[in-house]
Every structure is written in structure tokens, then in C-alpha cells.
Length: 394
Image (cartoon, rainbow, N blue to C red; front, side, top):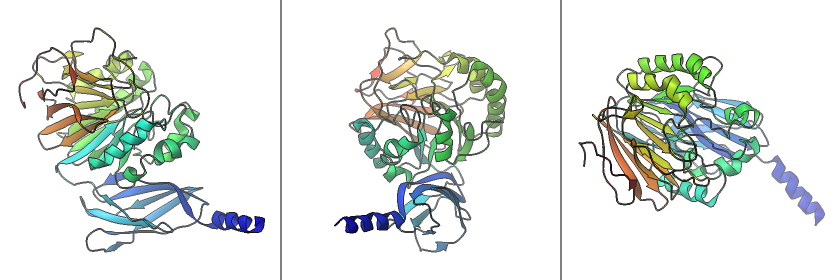
């Protein structure tokens, strides 16, 4: 009996079995990157073919670093679905390349998720219902210390059904950098290498359709943002041209929960955000949902022309509470349940909704291109304040 058990263990150890992933990253109109971990490490084949027609794509380059695999697929058509299969795995997944023009699309955003709680796993199941084209994470993927050994249970397992088909773009939270200054994060994800000097994959930008999205590592001091991030950000925003402009980073510039406003960001990049008319900023850190009125110069813009700041940090970790005497620029908040953000992008408007644990809207606002007037639809379940509303969509 013992001999049979030993044979089973040895036989299993010789097999190739996926232990984490796959995960879609670095999507573009002509291709995407797949990332997965497998034990024991061994050369494997990846097959990619058109979802309709079944034509096989041959130009897939696979790089292997110990048990982590990265496959870059290129030469594809924009906005098209493709199926892929990893050798030894019975499942076939379907993903899609990015659009090449201003077609409408949807992305989700959330943060402060990775504690393997019931709330994290339940919310993860909801995300797929919204059929996103892309996902943004606002940091703190892995509690308490961003350790590599925690990624399977606190990231790959709860989001397995989602990241295998939907491109995933995270930024670093304060918990993610507690282990080796974020080395496990950088080992796990494959992100654009276009940040400022010394900040490879910590700060980065990418275009999706008609939108430029910019990730920033907020785990630095004012001098770093002033001297390193601000000049780079100014250039990236300038080169974005008339595209939608969205920033995401962990520490919120305007919040009223456990933490104070991130003054180092307000003082270092606040004027750039105003000057370049950034439409939307997504942050984490304060474990709740918050949305400001359109902001300009650190205040609510009475003409409605400014940047909307959203804290979407209720992805699974324990919730925080709003402090009393809320600032007048805070348009809506919810600190009673876990939630995530849904952003529908069209040529002229962003429809920004916050979805709660019951899969129902908590809050909704519309943002016009070029940091134009944002108009809110009052929703009964939102905790909103007696402040004037902007004219527009009602």
C-alpha cells in the first residue's frame, strides 16, 4: 500500500500542472501577453487560434524563468477574439485584442482586495457578470506584506476566471511594497516598461482605444514626485493629445476616511492634472467608496469643469468609516459595503458607476470629455449630501 502511494506521489510530481494563471496582460491592437506559473517547470506548447474560423496563430514567443512562463503573441487583428490553450490543460480560454480606434468599451476598477476574505471571493464572482474589456487595480493586492507565497490564494485563485480572459493592470499599494520593495509584484506582473528612470513597471502608461491610462507608484515622498514623476507625467499627458486621460494610483488625493488627503501628490502633480484636464482619477487605500464633484485648484469647480476623483478601495479588506464634517467637494460615498467601479467609455462621455455587494448601483455619474461638466443621477442607496448638482444628464 505504501509503495502504491509512493508511486502516485512520484507520478504526480512528474506531471505538468498549472499552479497559477493564466493571466492576460499587455493587450494591444496587434497582440497580448499571457503569464502563468507551473510546477514542475518544463517546456510547454501554447496554441492560439482565431475564435471565429479557427485559423492557428504561430508567432507566439514563450519565455520561461523558473516556474513562471510569459508568452507574447503578436501579429493579430485589432478588436478580435482569440482562443488559446496551454499544453496539458483541458480548458480553452477566449480573450480579445484592444480596439484600434474610439470604439466604446468597459473597464472595472477596485482595490484593497487581497486578504482571501469571503467578501473578496464573493465580489470576484460578481466582476465577471459585467463582461469588462479591461481591469484596473488601485493597489494592495496582497495583505499583509505583498509576499510571493500569498499570490496564489489571495490573487490567482479568486480571480482565475477573470484574469484568464480580461487584461489586468495593477499599481503598487503600501502593503505590496512591504516585501523587498515590491519585488514579488514585479515578478508576478508584466507591465509596460515606459516609466521614468528607475521606475520600470512601477509607473507606466498604456493606450486602450481612445483612452490613455497612467499608473503611478504612490509609495514615495514629495521630492520624488516633484523631481521624478512630475516631469515624466507632464510629457505622457502632453503626448496623449485629445484622448481620454485617466490616472490610477493607491493613495487618494482627496478622501475623508481613515487617512488624510495625499498632500504630497496634490502639491507635486495637482497643477499638472488641472492643466492637462485629466477627466478621472482612481485611487485606493481608504477602504470605502468616495467620489468628488469635478475638482479644479483643490476645490469643487462651480462650472462643473474639472477632474473627478474616485476612491474605489472596498475590494475585500475590512471597511473604514467616513469621518464627520465631510468636505463640501465630496459628492457621494458609501462605507457600508464592499464594491467596485464600472466605467463605460464612449466617444463623448464616461459613465462611472459604483456597484455594491448585491450587484446593484450605489452611485452613478457622467463625465464629459476634456474634463467637462459631470452630471450625477441621484440613486436612493447612495449616501449623498445636500450640495448643488451639475446640470446635464438626469
